[in-house]
Image: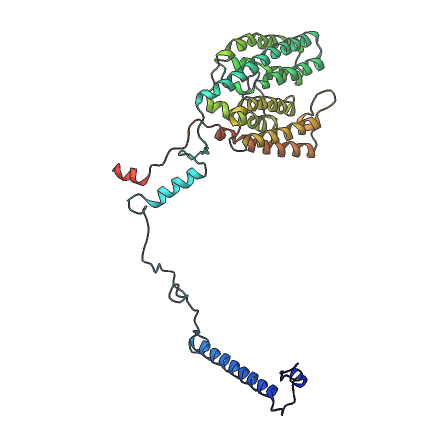
Length: 379
């Protein structure tokens, strides 16, 4: 190109002894490299001088921790011990504990409580009324079953009487939530619990149970069955007037199956018939009715209803799986190990879920902790 002084040799680079423009460029590059290396060496020397411990082996101690936490010292270097809420004389431990317990759903009496907004007590009127209506229907079924039991005893049919007793006992347990609420000796007239296996002078369904499975004459049991039947009209008259406290009713949701686990699956309350599985199945039915009536109150309050429904369904499925084609259940001593383990496991899971119901439908909220300013003004 005219006027250009760049040659092909300068583009490729000349030899070491070249004095042209290319040689001058190489000299400048060399000078820059030497200057850069020198600068890096200077930086390294300065850094070594200012980094603690990097240039001296006389004292090797951790950097930045010596003054804050000297080795071997556990003393509070701040010389400050906070024992009360700042700006007041309120004990910090007491106030903090109260707040922590409230946040974790523990009431002032140490019992589990809900931090949900409390429900008005009258919101239980409909659930309780619904259960009483259900119990009245059960009382009618119990009367029918007892009539059939008396007829089988009069006919001298022990096997038929045992089956009739199973039906009557199931209907009695379906009453569920009203146990302990019946006036006078009405509950004993229906199903008195003997104080010992050797007791003979007691009444109710368990007296018939003992006679049936201990070989008593069937005719001797007819008056006992008739006496139970005579108590049913009193039950029907009493139920409409039965009052159930909201707290008690919510607790019945888990107490029915707790009793079944303790008294029926152990066999302690069915020592002669061994019908603990049958009785527990009846308890599931009564529990599901309580939950059904409480469901509207539990909607949208935590996840309790979903958990309860899930576990009760699993428990119900466990009992359906071992139920025989004729509708009967194995007696306690007929359960296989796998069947008993399945019942116990799912019963424990259901009880764990049911125990959350009282807190979910609590009618009394946790106490409001006064603010610091309020407490100070109250002094």
